[in-house]
Length: 334
Image (cartoon, rainbow, N blue to C red; front, side, top):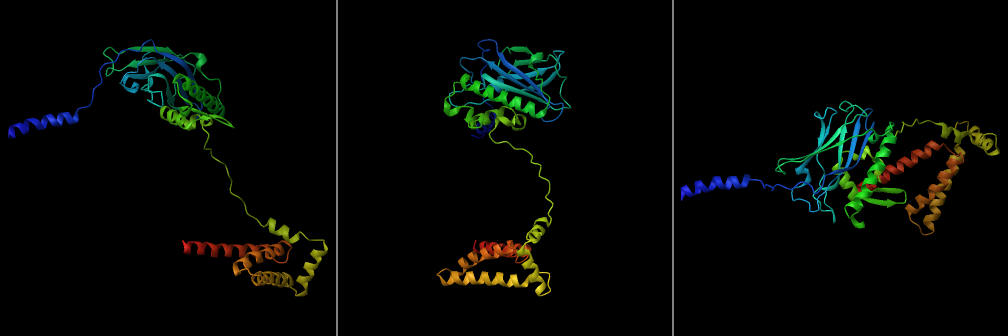
């Protein structure tokens, strides 16, 4: 019995560590094609480069092995040997589009300014089958032509052009993938056409950082708002003090200051508080409560400050005190 257990345990361990293996798949039904190659620069920083490839690997019946395991994409230098970048497709199955990444798809290559190859050169886009998926891995080569390079150099213009290109591809995939309207990659709004939630999911998975590369393809964009710090001053309050200068009302206010030989109008302050408490008392007597009286009593308090009965800054102080009281009451009740 012990010998049997010793024999079984290693077998179970091997089975636990084993990973499923796919059978070799057949080459594509026909030679893959590139629908378009678009090359842009100065997107995220001056001198960077972004290559967007729209391709088709035709299979009438998509293999069980996902496309990101069966094919690898490379961008090769002009010497046809040096590899500049590599990537795999993003497998996105949605609705009736259950292609395992085959058929129509996109491949991006991004180069920072330090790593970007020379602009305008004739590079090679190479599609290679992997030894894992193919018994005899196929290879296909395509050339980047001068017409594939964008003429734009301003970052905002380039981002807009790429955004338009992304939306064109998304609308084409709606047809090529045979999607129903419930699964469209695009959505039409009053302000234009944008990526739908499904479209955002696909392109964000296929192109890392696409929100920064093609922000106009999204309904909601994030931008840095330059808001300089505000410089506070006393210009408004000073204008309130002098707003009645040269009028009979201004002369009356000055006379009130001089009557008590003060730099503020004590008479008008007393009249203000008389009005406030008079209104509060009337409201309470007419069936209101003290809170209603305080709210309505604030009306003559504000009006009198605007008419110059007392300093406008004092009204701000009263408002701040009221806000502190209200906030403390809310937090206490919470």
